[in-house]
Image (cartoon, rainbow, N blue to C red; front, top):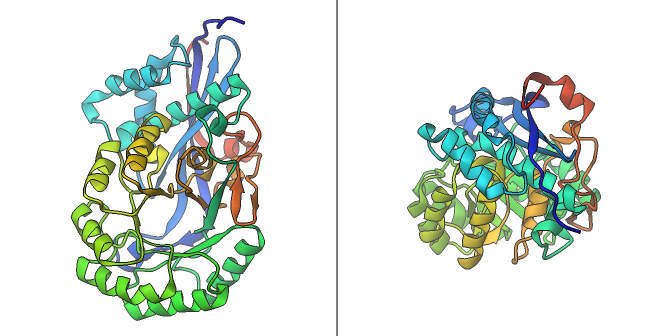
Length: 377
């Protein structure tokens, strides 16, 4: 069977506002730098080809930036029409140059991420393979941990109850937020959760960039006794040197990277040995094309991997990493899709459905605030 040339016929962009059931607070709220999070704004891209293949991708923004992503994507999407959807790297470069005056990170590439991810979804569907299998998987399931139950707006009793429920649902690890102005409260919360879940359940903490270097070192030393899998974002996301010093000083691994918005920014983390576990986010760095570049660099440096958020995408990508990774479990996105990812025995299972294995739900369409279609009418 010979390859039949195909071309992108339409690109439909939609901006979707996902309301959160409870206003969410992490350390950035308690230090006065941000307001509680009440919604997440998504940019969805739906691509169709002349041969009738379809792909779905998304990017997102928390608290600010969603309208900017949507506006930028609308300016460059026409450049994809008529192109071969299989030539994803070529297409990414073309779209990047279409909006080159605003740079190669942040909103500029996050807008492209939705299109890039949709192209990978389409390509895997064309092949009849889950995306992980198209890329080449090392495993059919990935260790998973829960974050959405450990925010600081929840009482410690609520955090403990949610931890128990997560473990019962087959989720392997528990991550809780720290970084409160009173460090003693952080230690009390960590101690309470560790006692509640026992010594054998993996436990992580996340300070969301709210410590200075002195506090991070002192807290890191105090936290050693809890046998944590990692301490996440103890310092400002761009303080690579500070993270490197902390990683060298502590036995507990340091994890960071989720807030960085390009491969180039992650390269600095890697070059300075600023973390033991790197946490890139495919929608934030520009999509799967860029994320795969970053995985090669991280593996060469001997780093472990724990991608941030968007488990529907990152499950597939983590399954391709040579080293045993983690995937973050969030149930916030469940209403956006008709399917659910399965967890069992502490692991998230790669779905056997082609592509990402998710479809846009009717609820997501109801939460759509605007959309635009490019291509022939």
